[in-house]
Image 1 (cartoon, rainbow, N blue to C red):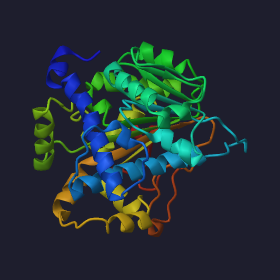
Image 2 (image 1 turned 90 degrees about the vertical axis):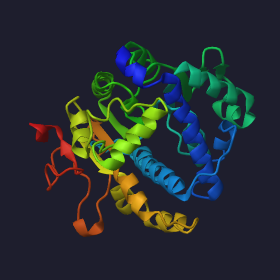
Image 3 (image 1 turned 60 degrees about the vertical axis):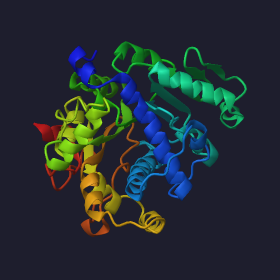
Image 4 (image 1 turned 45 degrees about the horizontal axis):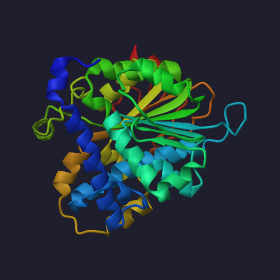
Length: 356
């Protein structure tokens, strides 16, 4: 469990309130045409109009994680040529995320989708799902919803209350489904926990999932002027980034996974992701949506956020999953037997044998 000093700097209620901020930011993007989401408005009480730089930043995060998720869901055949693996998604600190309902509409929903968050959050989400036929009808006739317990249980979707630091509870959740192959998603969740708790969660996941990818969206570079201001702003709201000094760089993010037993890991900052991974056509489309002149601040902001992912691939299913390099680099994602030709360069793929 987190220590009392850590909890005193990072107020639980304040961290949970970031869920409301994220939902409002997503709705702002949707209203401006950055992305489609027919459900997020059901979770936002007070819509707000975000600035162009916030809209673009939220879009970049959404586009990167959604592209990685689509890659996972489209992986059809393992190393033996066998297909039709039942895929699962485990969302840590899911908040009011609506991805499951969107994937249902797109015909891409996984076999099992599990969302975990504090009971205060899951109770609110369960109540909204129960009261909105638009959401409830997608769960099937046998679904059970408990506002009091903060639970939604259906054949393919499960919303459950959990303190992520309680590893025994995580094991109980996973026992509800065969969770290989799996995606584990974390969008600015572990970084609010103390480093020991984060390592325990990531290490548990590595041992528990033999074929899986763990996606992480977090802040980096706390030591420069922009990073220090970012941290002060969050701490003033009671949201201390308890884990940022433990993994302050892209290389540290990669080693964070590898040290906990994951086979390979990659971390890119959001500026590189926006330029080299987000689809060109989509990037050009959204850049025409609003007048934008905050380029210097945009570059600094995106250099202080990253997406990292780690892969275990016992089934040989995930060889083509990951960031694709620009065409002029003539490079595709590596398998564990083909280490990257820029070994050790921050932000390039690293395998467990490269940390020695």
